[in-house]
Image 1 (tube, rainbow over the protein chains, first blue to last red):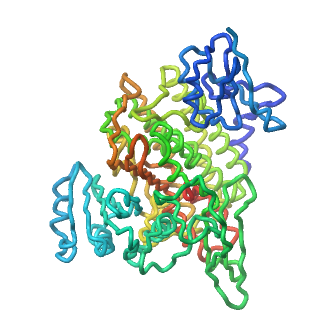
Image 2 (image 1 turned 135 degrees about the vertical axis):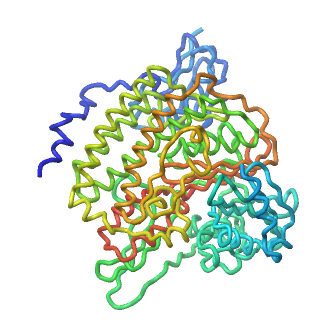
Image 3 (image 1 turned 90 degrees about the horizontal axis):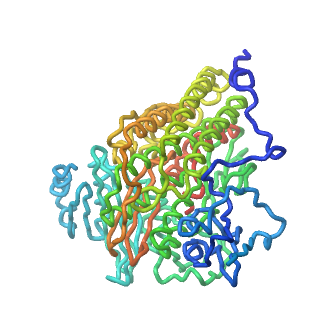
Length: 109
Length: 528
């Protein structure tokens, strides 16, 4: 009668993780938040042209990524020749206001 | 592939139909026949009645700029072999009406309502011309799929109502359910009429997630269209984008590298497994077999994590591209897939063993939500739902694409047409999918991932069929300058939704959730 225990705890133990009390690191190559390496970016603007939703804008020495528009397709990182734009594994992106979703990155050089 | 019988098909037409043929041409396995508009319904009825063909799609394109007409395309698949037949008719822009196919072919019903509201093409003799997807307050005479419709201008709202079918009588109650449901699912309205417990009528109202995908696609260059097609229906993004890519590749005459064809097959099957796991878990949950449901969800999660490890995306997004794929499976990826699949198969066997022996579950699923063989044929249902009602159709075998031609697999078939049969079809398909992935990885040759596709000529038609976990999806593209002139998407759910109205008839209301889970249809794919 209690055969179905075999499906659960008795055979598999605990399968849930301790997130969020323990950090979760997504596997390598995971498409998380697009991020900018300020050392390598040369403000060429190819990422902004490649973005299907127009989430990336360049002004002065700043690259702004609007995570409210981003669809995490990775086109920007693919278009970048210098490794300035890359897909990070960051996935905890909730904010308390719309404005905070617009992430500014400073570009050096 | 089979030019003989296809040619004969035109020669064997009854004289009254033969005299209405304007032109016909045969290209590979695709027969195109243009007929005069008054003969369209007769020709379609002949294809179904005489050739036993399956209706794949009926849709229109606005070509008034070119020749002053709307073109109506009715597409059929022959029951044997890989043959596709397109019957085309031109409808003059000044008199946009034609004889409805619906009185002869019930499955044409929703297609014609869709053309009615999108293009303003009036199907004379159609029994039900209520709107299908647009808002109740959409003004009459505004047709969003016409080329002269400007999507950037807001449409004024005109308050109108929607007439539901009513069953009247003593003790008959109406239960409206939705469009907002408990749980994180999509919106759709169900109007039940019940006499005591049994449902005596159900009407499904869709359109709440209509997003104008087809219109939007006409403004997007082909590479961006891939991303759009990945988002037509979230959980079968890979097979949808595959159909779109294949349609464009067929226009461009591109040669997809061998390795990419095998990878596409492997990814398609990975998508099928995680979705079927969800469906099987859903059936377990709705029959109060909680442990089994959780086990299925654990397995589904393991597949989703595997997808993320291999491609970076849990839902296999950003994998397809026109000309091939972007993500490779390397040696370590292969190893992690085979380890995961072995573990999955062992645990899945435990789960299936339990589910198929549990009296409380079987009692709920057997003879529940019957869809008879006849109803399934007339409604032209596709996918696991068709295969659970005795219709032996699977796009992967009948119209092979990617690498399916070179791999061996069987197509599970049940005849009962109840929730149990649909559950069993999905269970067996998971096992076939595991074997297909293993075969694909064994035979996958080295080579390029993506061919360069540069020249997509304007004014050509490309079509592709793929088998999603819900059944056959079609993408039909008429090319324009760098972007589609017309892009028709036919999700399997569009054919399967009307079948749920038939399947719940006579069942008790508490069985509706489990019937709905066994169908597991997409709202977003249907509403586009």
